[in-house]
Length: 210
Image (tube, rainbow, N blue to C red; front, top):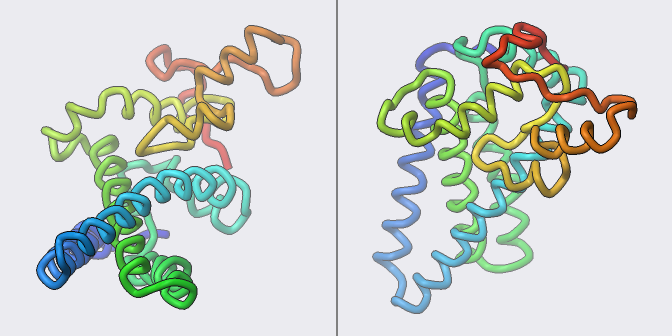
């Protein structure tokens, strides 16, 4: 949905503070052994985010009509302040990750996993912002492959490259541009097997997917 400039940038501030505070409090209060376990769960949370990000983008933002319509606005205006309000994303993370894991396990496990998911979500926001705005420039220069991959997602005729922070799950599920091109080359007559166009060539530029 459309956000104000302050609401758009609040993600970076709120999640950075929560992740930093979570790490600082746990390391300060726990023993080295307990802190190591907490950090392990946080690492699992970061990895889990990369897997969660893929179906959210592919299945929710591109296939569920109400969300697809809002996401299409981002495809039409990639530099507009469009996203999920911080209060909503934070509520979902707490309700889907923290509370169930706390109820079924322990507070330490729940807090570590939740901070890891938040860190993954924060990195997703930074990567996506750097790709489109080319800021911060130091980060943007490291993301040339991610920028090319995401440009193909925006401008290719056939949906693909749904991963923003990593291309790994696109390769696993066969939706990366390389996978789709290989499939088209193997069976060019198959329905939906059209080659992923190159944004650099201007192919299908301006067309969007819902």
